[in-house]
Amino acid sequence: LTTVILIFLIFLLVLASLSLVVTFFIAATMFSGAPWVATRATTVRAMCDLAKLKPDDRVLDLGCGDGSILITAAREYGAFGIGVELNPLLAYYARFKMRRAGVQDRVHIIQGNMYDVELPDVDCVMLYLLPKATARIERRLKKRYLHLRVISHGFQLQETLEHSHNTQGKVTVRRYEW
Image 1 (cartoon, rainbow, N blue to C red):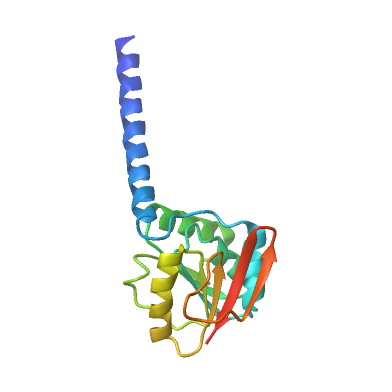
Image 2: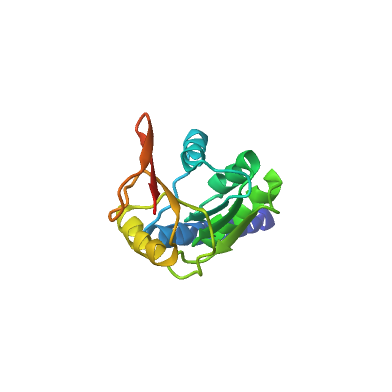
C-alpha cells in the first residue's frame, strides 16, 4: 500500500512539474507581445483568400502558433510556408501537425523570436499580433521588403493604408500592400 501511495505522489509531482513548464512557456509567449490564440478554420481560409494565395506563393506567418494558417495555405492553396514561433512547445506542436497533415515538404517552422530571425524572401506575411507588436513588426517588414502583401487578423497596421478587408461576424481580416 505504501508503494502505491509513493508512486501516486511521484506521479503528482511529475504532473505538477509539467504544468509549471507549460505555464512558463505560455507566460513567456504572452509577454512577447503575441499570446497564442487559436485561429478558427473559417478565419484561416478568409486570410488565405484575402491574400489571393496561388500555388508556389511563399507565405511567412509571424507568431505561427500551431501552424494552422501555414498548413491550410500549403494543403489547400499549394503555397510554401515558413512559420516563426517563440514558444518551443507550440513550435513542436506546429511541426507535429505539419507532419500529420502531410505538408512537411512545403512548410518549415522556426522556433525563434520574430524580431530577431532573418526574414526570408516571401510573397505574403500573415499576422495575428497585438497592436504594439504589429506596429513594431510593420517597421521591420517595411525595411526588409520592397513589395509585400500583409494579411492581419484583428489589428490594423499603423503606417500603411488598408488595401481591402473581409469581416465575418466580429472578426476582421485586413490586407495591406506595398
